[in-house]
Amino acid sequence: MTRSPSPLVLLDLDGTLTDSAPGIVAGIRHAYGALGLPVPDDATLRSFVGPPITDTFPAHGVPADRVDAAVRAYREAYAAGGMYDNRVFDGIPEVLRALRAAGCTLAVATSKPEVYAKPICDRYGITELVDGVFGAPLDEGTSTKATVIAQALASLGRTSPADPAEGPALMVGDREHDVHGAAEHGIRCVGVTWGYAAPGELVDAGAVALVDDVADLTDTVLARLS
Image 1 (cartoon, rainbow, N blue to C red):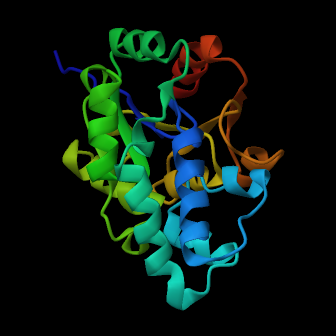
Image 2 (spheres, one colour):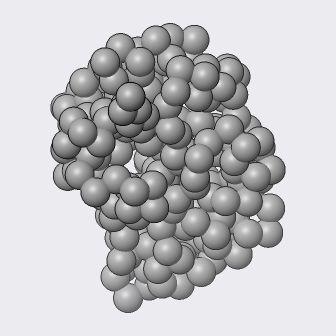
């Protein structure tokens, strides 16, 4: 008997699996201060969580010729300990176990550089609950969410996620970048509202469903995979 391919669930990290804002925001504050630039307001600082910082720095007042310096200053603070000013959202480990028990292949796909994503996932027990952790290169300007997803798909042996013969695939994320990156591969995205999206961001981007409570995530994912 031919075995059906397993469903694939791609999972964003920051704002979806972990509350990483404290460490990231502190690093961004440090970067602006190091460059002698005005620090953005709190709402703007939270918007840095998720997208590549090489996109968000120039969008929020850092001159193009100083973006590299801002990234270096941010990473100094982040690597010095800010990356671990972080926590897994309550209930997420149970969701990952339940999805695996239901036969899903799970992969973290994050715009965070992989050299940070992997140790974070190791420290907080995520690595052992998924089938792979995939992130951006340190040169984030060469990567998008779509390229991270492409890397994950290739590593997991998925050549065409829109092909029913390869089994269904779904993205779970908290920002528009997750929705758009998945769509480039013909993958739908479930949006979670406990992350860092602005009001209406996920709906406007085209998320196929919104989940307001971690306790409802497993059922929503399985329903959208069927």
